[in-house]
Picture (cartoon, rainbow, N blue to C red):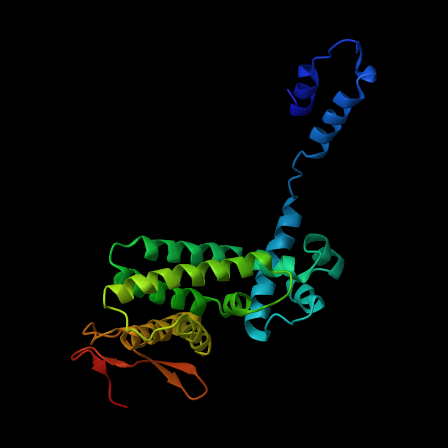
Length: 256
């Protein structure tokens, strides 16, 4: 039976009401229930939505958050009216485009904070945060931006930095993190990681992993003897030339 009809049949009219027309309050409840029923998107509307989000991520990554909405619509192959119908304001589009990344960021931080070894937890956060941002520079733009109206992104940034600050204090207390570490050092790390340029996302991630290894060494209170991740050669202009930068025989940087 249809849920709306089911709700109607369950209405019990107390005296003096004998009919539905005598019970305006109950009718108001029926109207609210009817209006709140979810309206699933048609398949073509879903396709349009995904194309818009893909185009937004691509353009935000390349040109920043100031890219015009009309350019996003053009790249997605939809009309401006379709774009604004789905996302009435740019902040709605920014928030939705990077919702998955924001959830992943929170999960990474929560897992790091839950580690009994605070230094190991902090190292895991650094490695995974660098890789997450390397895979999508547009997310870094949104995460670090003060773009007005992106409340979810601002709250996510505040949550992340506050949680890492607490984890860092625990690592300092364990004498594993250098005493002069400040939270701004993590912000500098994210900004520097964003600057990695490569010919492909895979090459950018490889370079980011090595960068994270250097960051961990810099943050450590004492020498870190763990080997760095393999290097990725970046040609002039920050483009990966496809050659490996590690000598597999010795685990060191290969000669030029």
